[in-house]
Image (cartoon, rainbow, N blue to C red; front, side, top):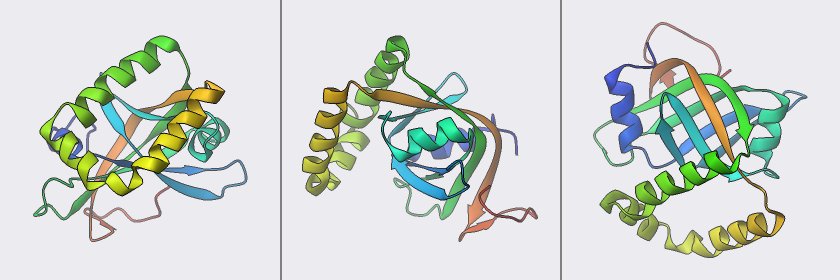
Amino acid sequence: MSTDDPTIFAVMRRSMVARIATRSCDERPCVTPLYFIYLHGRIWLGTAGWTLAAHNVRANPRVNILFEAEQDASAHRVLQIRGRASVRTEQKIQHSYDLRATQKYFLTSSGSHNTLAHIPQLPFMHKYHAQSAEKNSFCVIEVIPEQANFLNNGMLADSQTGSLF
């Protein structure tokens, strides 16, 4: 499936969290849920440079991202995007991500609903942001999509088989 298919954008638009699957340099897998935005054909995920996700992307740029349309309970599909990632630390990119993430996650009704649904996690998020600010280590994982598939009940929707990598 082409990564510019309109159904892919529809799922990403209804998704609030992306789950990025990375591998370490010794091939250990890790899945990390992160906030994301889609901009100019790229997926940007906000994190800190000291996280396992950022460390793994530096070691191995091949990633998979899973999106689920949380705002549409009738859609039982998960979008899987494979691509190449890099860790971006430029101020311009960080500022652009922060602006768009604030709009998506705090200034929209779905973003406000998502924040309210996760109130118990806010102290942990505050601690994470304080540590990242103290270390001046905010970054963006930028993913260039290469392939997209829909998964139904954990299985590829088409005839392809294999693992997440």
